[in-house]
Image 1 (cartoon, rainbow, N blue to C red):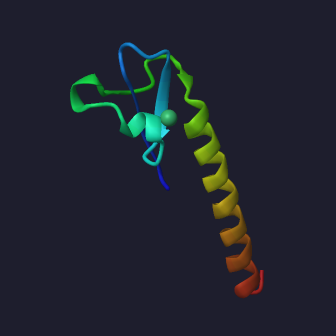
Image 2 (spheres, rainbow, N blue to C red; image 1 turned 90 degrees about the vertical axis):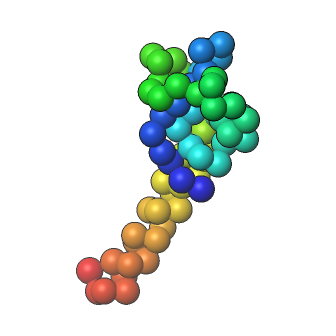
Length: 69
Ligand SMILES: [Zn+2]
């Protein structure tokens, strides 16, 4: 999973920012516009972003423990 540059489709009221989002990936090239478009974040992307952030948090904590901080 990876958070990336936001993109959206003109006909959608939401934007995506996670490359693992099934809805965002389904947008064809022509419908895909870079940027958030001032829209709200897709619920699936938000979920993926949260999962990713907590994963990074755990890994970072483990790294700090390993180096004795
Ligand atoms: Zn999405």
